[in-house]
Image (cartoon, rainbow, N blue to C red; front, side, top):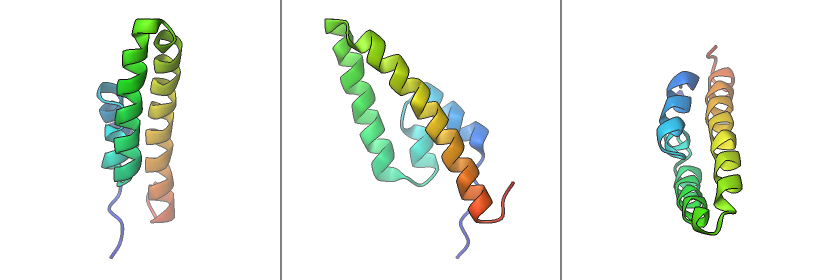
Length: 80
């Protein structure tokens, strides 16, 4: 059964609002759950200031990963 095409823009927008949601959209359920948990931990760490560094770095990586994974899925299965 062919893999459905994934829209990289949708993956990024979902991850923009909730880190990990774009990964879940891309079919990477466990990775998405791990990203959601990490985002919560980094968000909590803002209490001790290190979260102000870790959370934005993780958030940007999350967006990058969601976009590139969607593109890779489409290329692998004949998408754009």
